[in-house]
Length: 339
Image (cartoon, rainbow, N blue to C red; front, side):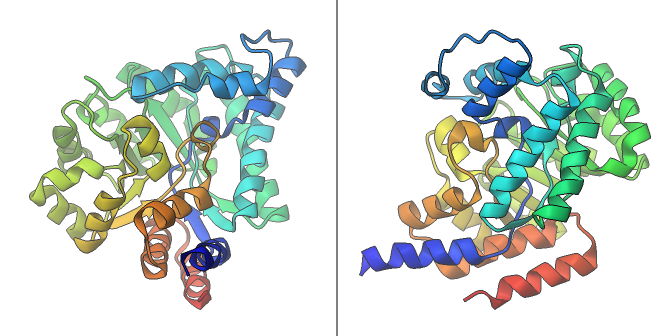
C-alpha cells in the first residue's frame, strides 16, 4: 500500500501549480554549466569534472556552504552568462510546474569581481521575459544585499538599481548572519521602502542572536516577509505576531537538512498549526541537489506530509507572494482544482 502511495503523491506534487519565493539564482548554477561557462570565458577551474565539483560540496553549516558558493560563481562574467543562468533555472522550474517565482540575485558578489551591475540585471531580466513568453513561468526579481559587507556598499548598490526599478519587486538580505543584524541595514531598507520596493530578510536557522534578528525584522525593518524563520518557534510572542501580520516564511527543507542536519518537517507542521504562512522553497537547488518537487517529496517520504498539508503550503506561497492580485486569484483557483 505504501509503495502505491508514493507515486500517487509524486503525481499530485507534480500537478500542483507552485510558487517559489526563496531561490538564489546563483544557487541554481549546476556543475555542468560551471564547466561550460569556464570554458567559454577562459577560466581555469580547480576541478577536472562536474562530478569532482559535486564531490566538493562538503558543507555542514552556513559559512562552509558560502565559501564554496561564492567561489563557483566566478565563471559568471557576461550578460549572456547571467541570461543562461536564469533561463536554465526557469526551464527546470517549468518542468516541475512552478508557474511563478520571486528569485534572488546578489549583485555585490559580481560587482566585486568587476562585473557591471547592468550586465547582471539585464541578463536576468531578459531571461525572465523569455521564460514568461516561452515557458509560462512568470517572475518578479528580488535584489539581495550581502550582510557581511558594509551598509554603505548595500546603499551604493541600491542606488545602482534605481534606473532598473521596473525590473525589481523587492530587496532582501542574505549571506553570513553572524554579527550582521538587520539593524545594520535599517537605513538602506527604509530607502528601498521609499522607492516602492517590498522588503524581506534572511533569518537563517540556528544563527547567533537569531531571535533578536527576527524581532528587528518585525519591529525595526517592518519586513513584508521573512526568509527561513524557523527559530521564531522558540518564542510564542514572535509566532503570534508573525501570524497576526500574515507574514510569509520561506522555509527550505532540504537546504536545512544540509546546513543544520534537520529537514525541519516538525517545525513546518508547527508553523501551520499556529496559523503561520509557511511556504516550501529550494534555496540553492544546484548545491542541495533538490528543486521544488524534491523538497515536497522529502516531506512526504520522511515525514508523511499529506495532500492537504502540501496544498496548504502551496496556497500559502501564492497568498504571500507579491504578484498582481488578479493573477494570484487565478493561480489559487488552479491550485484548488488539483485532486
